[in-house]
Length: 295
Image (tube, rainbow, N blue to C red; front, side, top):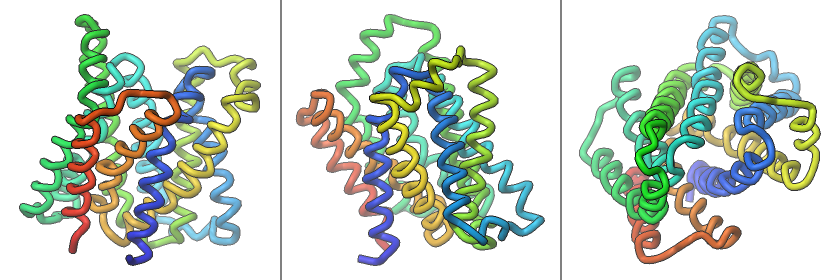
């Protein structure tokens, strides 16, 4: 197993585990505020970790760095959190994960001229079917609970739009990924995205002093710490390295692995349902990732 393959496995694991702390934290503080705190603190820590490399950003790279930070983190997470709030969670997860490889492949084709071959299409098709099986129980439950809520379609559209912004930002990041240390790029993108999320949160959410205090209390504090250390310092830094070395499509294949881990965590920690549909879905998604990762 190559080093990048091992890092890919670590990234899939930690990002699969982040769904539980996001759910826990969002029950106690406004969701975009939670994301703003996570990315702002994580960005500062990354830049401190980078040390002298913090200034190694070519002058011409700043416009693209700022733009991609706003796409990857600010626009994406604002729309994702708003959409998930109004749409059934199972359907929102399907829309998010199923469109990541599709949007990434299309963006790579349009922006970088990457060739779309049969294996990539087969992997996307297999993985999308797997996602359907994995979240079938949750999606049907969400549909039953929605009862034709007109905000449902808008919520799903917001999730799809946020995912599109994320994928375009990832592809646009690749040209500058090789011009500076990976930790420097990840740190600045995370911090700038966090600042953007803070502006959005303060503008749209009823954030008060009690929410700030809640960040340092149980159970929000351990959730935020895991999101910062695991989700951002480890996960996002690895993703930026894989984006540089593998390209956006292969790096984005975590979308076919992390959901299965997230479902497994939900089963163990929250007693969420797990049956033959979830098992089949997980196997299909792992198979899709294996097909696409094979050289």
